[in-house]
Length: 134
Image (cartoon, rainbow, N blue to C red; front, side, top):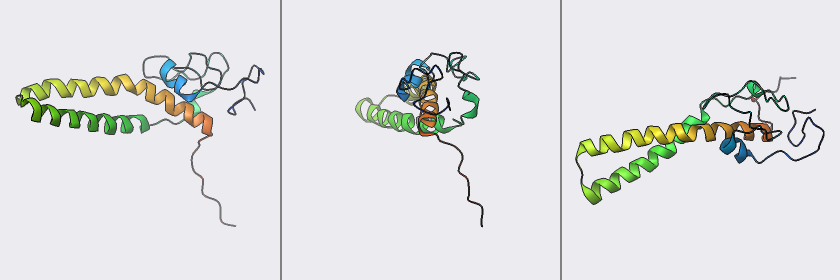
């Protein structure tokens, strides 16, 4: 079955690229072609090189949650440090931290979405199923 991790449709038997490549380069988790995204944040329906169907993966809101929590923590620590070190006015905080938070979240979202899709592919992640009672 060509959709299994470690197998490539071309039959070359090559190992799939590391999941981080899917995030950094927007590459297919099976063949490594840069076909994962059709726009900055929108996944393609399938890989143009190997035919892997990207629509069957459910990345959902996972990347946004992790980025918001991580970046929010970092920004909060920086804002507290700036407040105690320099004591700027409230308007400086508003002009500095809100755009920085938005920019970091949007810039890192593509990487996080690509990485999560590649990890779903590598680990064969799918919805949990309850076992039917016998």
